[in-house]
Image (cartoon, rainbow, N blue to C red; front, side, top):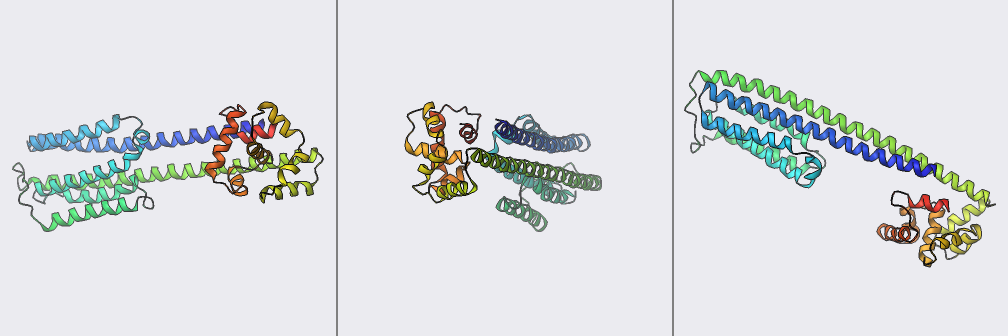
Length: 330
């Protein structure tokens, strides 16, 4: 009973840890979106006030509202987990083309090209280089291709600003350089926070795994003590384990000799259990987990889980209780 409660506590703590990690990561994403929101909002206000370019200012304002909308979407890391990576790729690509457009729009003299580096350094926050190698490669190629293309081609078909004067580029270039540096520092800050989250999660998971391993060893030790209480020698214990591991036809008979009251006790709970189900109960009684049962019975893990599920239903084992713990108590 104590072990069962320990396992339940560990399981609940693991779920809480996962939920906390999701909340922290979501909070980081929202901070990043807030930064983009403020950046685009500043630019839209700056352009309309100092240059009177209403069209471009409106365009940036619309994008600003897009970041605001993403911040308002609750649980985005859970609800849209499958499409989240695709969404990030789309947003990065959109930002690259926006940077390219403004680079051309300002006659390549306003320092907009520095934002290519800001985007490049933002990739580690949203992607894992090992798991998302292809996605990272695609984004790096898109950013590099746009940067090179804008440097070597004029793109005369794109509109150019009629609101900038020759002297105005110094002011806006300085502004863009300052904001690209700020973006780079923000990217480093977010990446550091993300690494701290991942490291903390890995450390907590390692501690939980270590605790579970210790509990399993304790559980095995208690089982051996129970066998010794039933007047079983170490030789008997090794024999029954060996018969179970080799899937010997003698195992079930020997088991009933060593545990004469177990099978009748199980049948008293449900007399309709078939031989194969009783055999699985016997294996669980000697503390074989799903993987070990699959190995010694030459079955797949899925087949073992299905069999254990049917046993759980027939014995009316509560869903929040570990089936091995239930069997060990019989």
